[in-house]
Image 1: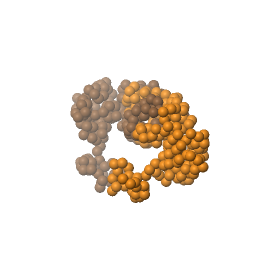
Image 2: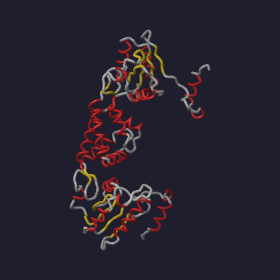
Image 3: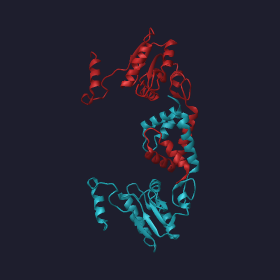
Image 4: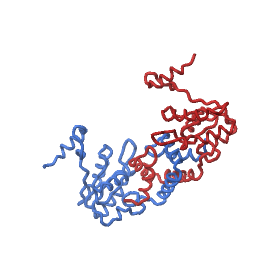
Length: 198
Length: 198
């Protein structure tokens, strides 16, 4: 009804997570109404990102630089590697300023259901980084899901043979600000087991 | 933490309706993971749309042509104009193949609260189209909201002086497939008032 350009735009927008066909149409209309203020800048920005952003060959982060800003920052602790499932987790930690070492992005979790094996994840490159030496601790910061914890166990096994390399995982317990009344049994039980003397 | 390109991309994506800062970040990560399959095609598609799509000078539709495909289609009934609030409404009607005349997009509704007056909508151009002659009926297809109905009343008043131009509005009643038990009182009352002999 109005040229293939709009149809194609809607079709591609609908592939974004969180946008279905209906909201993609709404987004397309919004963009067309704000052609100079939003549509053109977004087109340019996406084009620039496609050209400029690369995957860090060391840790798997997205950045304009390779090695990325984190891996290239000499002030950061190269002896500690935090292993995360996804770049989103890395970004969350950087936003929170909770960690000052280096990262390693797995690119997912082991999953028998989805047919994801160790060779589908960036595990060999992690082992190679540890083997290269200079690493004192590997923090397994996978999600507290079944797949995340399975993956953490698998990696811990793979790294067990390296003497002098401590392997740790994030603590489980009450989220800060969380109410006990609303907590699931698993978290509550984990918080009891990991209780500390005051 | 990873160059201004990603930050700018997230910032612009967050301006789309239905995407907040959090889902914009998720969308950006998704795009970066599918750089060649999605990010680059989307950037190109948006750029092409920004260049090619224009607003129809007659009805206000978005199209690569001006006059748009609907206004330029000689097979469509030029004597009937369907007045809609938004291009989205026009698209919905075209998807449903429910109307074969021409359209007029108002670009919103009158709203005292938001300070939208008649001069902010494409009302003068509608009156001009009717004044130019050849129009037998104007269908007011604004939303069944207070603002939509206020706008319809205002336009009906403006068009009252044209002899031989019928002004109508869409029927109110039970949605097809709708259950009476779940219907609001306003719709039910409208359906009673507009009842028809079988």
